[in-house]
Length: 429
Image (cartoon, rainbow, N blue to C red; front, side):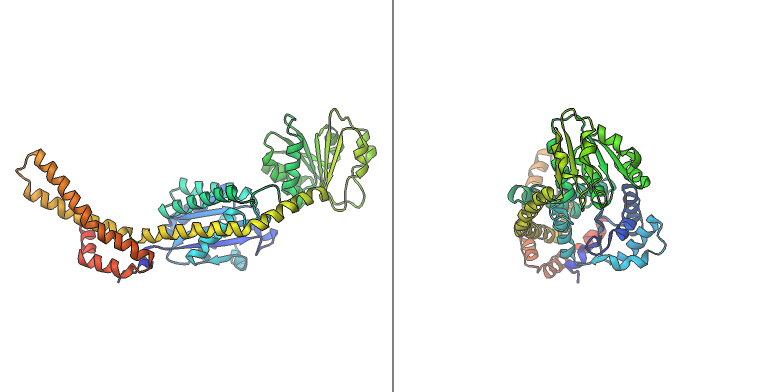
């Protein structure tokens, strides 16, 4: 008996994310584009995979793949090999393994929509998923299944934007800060932005600066190497901490996120600066690192954690209220995708049946039309093709209906035996 379930492999997922792994583990496992490329090629060569996607961001490293076997341990070992981690098996506990078809697909949808993000509704994930899919497609690692799945994901993402408030506004402190900077520097050509301190929030702000593409960003930190590494990665400039005051004088925007028990930027200091039109200060430190009285200086604007966080909190509340709508859109999309997938399960049988009938038609045409002229051949060709379509119609409709009822196994066997489709297929091969 040929079971429908045997005709397609399970879609599976391996996930290491902020939900089950701290940042020091995530950064060890994290994959850059070169590593993803190399890993995809290995997966293709070693396991003959066809529907594979690798997603790696600061919050997650995930591999999605279709196969009849659970290859999670082998794939994690390949990640270890790629990253030069000899003891990668020690990291197994941090990975979530999903071997259920529907659960893996649901997980991909939730990740792509931003439901699984550290900041719910994070907009960056959408582009990261598109890049991951593009890389798979470029390496011929996206078959009809993955193509259809990803286009269903992207269509659902558009629906979320158009029909819900889930992607409105900035919901993380760092993103809200960048959105504010973008708003206030919109009339400044190539705004000069100084980032002081690259702790978790400072680094997030630096990464979010991609949303102000023409900004000239300088990063400084007490440990210069850390500022330098981040600046190199993001294409910004790094500056030694001792030159901070000079850079502050030149900057249009100063973002401070440093740990200090007393204010680092004082009113006296700001008064000594040249301010041609305006200077924006953003204090993301707790306790605060900028004196609130600097706003008394003409042209100076100051925003702190509370101003920005309240804006982010309001947005987050609106997003959380929209989650049930997003989940409903995902559920509808998955239902529609599974109906297509069920149809795909009977496609090989339908194609074999078409080929079997076409083979009979061509053989009979050849046998009886040896002495016929081209006009007669054309007429009989049309008649026999039309007959074939009519004969095919009922079994095809019945197969697809049985599929939607999850009841196609028996009908596939009957049609295969009735028309001896396995033999026809072997003959054709």
